Length: 98
Image (cartoon, rainbow, N blue to C red):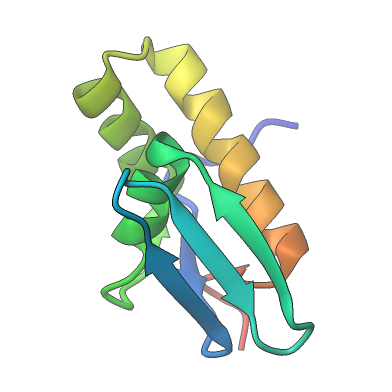
């Protein structure tokens, strides 16, 4: 499914996280009491969501391109895959959601 790269996402209030020494992250959904570990690149994208302002898929993909020299098409797929996983985990929602 093709999505608008300008689509924006934000963290929900019931999320907690811890960035580990190696740059990876542990993310906790406080409603379900489930945790997930993100690798270093996933953690870098997750950290973009931390300031609270919604972030576009385009910006997340740009981080992968700039930081890890990932080609644009792959960066877009990877950013979308991570966002979809975080939405399914219940810690990220599209900007228009309450």
